[in-house]
Structure formats: structure tokens, C-alpha cells
Length: 363
Image (cartoon, rainbow, N blue to C red; front, side, top):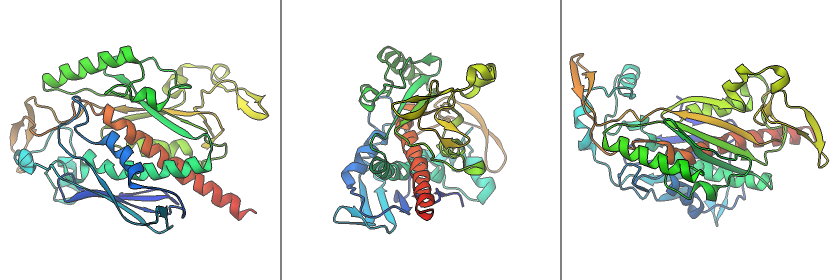
């Protein structure tokens, strides 16, 4: 029913925004992987609400608990269950939308599909569901680090509305990203982004932007042909994140303005390895990694919940108006950075395990 992601490394998330809690069940995690709640918590702390003046002020510590699949600090190879209890739910903030559909939210479409919806904070459609993804992503990163000595994923805010950052994707590190609350490594652009988000928030409005992500140290040969191409699974993973509206890898849409002679990545021998002199492909060719850095961009729309009065209709089909209440992000990008990293890690981990299975069966 759309709640499970992956083939060999399978992740199923559960829970609603204002229910008892949010969590994830991970099946297919290899045994004997060292993992602790503290390692998972580090990633959840980057995603949690209330971490800065730019985010929703919902006060959730998002403390994780591992319920199964771990013994003496190591994975058992059995299903892992990780859960976070909701603490600061305020369903009364959403009482008005019990009978009204919020513009550009999933209220109407969920009711059209199921004939029922949880109107408290958006229920299952809330971005709070991504807690399970980030928790699973922390474990996927740990597995990938064991498989590839130089593996790392770094995502960062590259654009907010019309403000575009200048970032050297080949050199950027997570410490550069975490230097400011907007998670943009370009300090000058970051200052402008923060000012804009504060201004828009005070006006009761919202803004979107772009997150760029780069993965280094992924070995060549990861990915499957035809329908399970690496970039196809990355696209599905990214577009499954709430508020996303676009995905491009490598040169992306800029390739439509180039000739083949400009876009092709010539091969060369470098350090005893087959490499490319340019990387317009974004590290993926024919749906399979070629050993170069894999980089892509994800477009996020402005959050749909705004304090301004908007036209809508009721579930009894009457014309109405609605100004949102509750605690919401005026821009989702700063908190979406670890979510993008987590979903990328899930894709790479799943494909790495699939590749290992292919090689093991051919021995």
C-alpha cells in the first residue's frame, strides 16, 4: 500500500503526526552491524522541529527507541523496529480543518481515496512521517561505510526562492553545511536566505527552494538496468519526500541546451582506474554508477500551510475560507537536508546489497 521502500533493504514506516508515535520497521539489514540509539539520534536531531528560529516551534525531542533487531549493540539480521513517541501534539489547532480542505494539502485527496482522513496535523501525510526514513537512513549509512571505505553523503540548501548559493560540490563537507541554521555552506547566501525566510514567516507566507546532494565513494557497478536504474530509484525516493516537486541528476535539464560533443564525459585512466574527465552524467550511466561523484538536485515547493486567508471548500461542498493555525515551517529546506541524505542512503544501500548478492551468486 505504498508504505514500504526498497527490495533487499526494505523499509516500512508507520504512524501519524498526532498519533501515539512514528516509527519504522527495517527488514533485510545484515547481521553484526554495530549500531546504537545515539547514532540514530544524531540524525534525528538534525530533522526534529524546534531546532532553530526558522522551523516550526513544535517542541518534540524525537527521542528514538530500538524495540527489536539489536542485541549487545549489533544487528541480528532480524527486523529492526525503531520508534519515536509524539509528545507535543495539539490536535485542537486543527479542529477547523476537520470540515475544510486546506489548499494544496493532501486533505481532499486522502478523503477522495479512503473516504476518511485524520485531520489532526495531516495524519499520515504529515512530514513527521519522515522520522522513520531518517532513522533507517542512519543505519543505511553505517552499512555503506562498512562496504565502501570512502563513502559519504552530503546534502545542503543550494537555493531558497531566488537566492542561489555558490558551493563547490566536490569539496563540501557536512561540517560546512552545519555551520548555520539554514544549512547552506555559502555563508553570504545563507545570511540572505535566513533574512528572507524570517521576512516571509512574519508575513504569514512561505517559500521553497532547492537541495543539492552529492554522494562520494560509491563503487562502479551499483544499480540495475531498465526499470530499477539507480537514478530512477533516486528520483522515486526524492519525490516521495513531502513538498518535493522536481528532481534532476547530473546536468539535468541543462543538458537539453547542450550538444553531445559538449555533454559527453570522455574516459581516461587516472590512478590506475577508469575515470571520466567531466561528470555531466552525475556519476550514473545506463542506470549504473560509474565511480564518479553522484550528484542530484531536489526542488521543494513553498509549504502549503500559511497564515493568510485562502479560498477553499468544505467536505459538504460549500465554498469557504481558511487561514491555517498551528505550528509550521515557513520553509522546509533546512530540516529536509537530512531527509534527502537518508533517502539517498536507502537507495544506495539497497542497490549495494543487490550487487553483493549478484557477485556472491556468480562465485
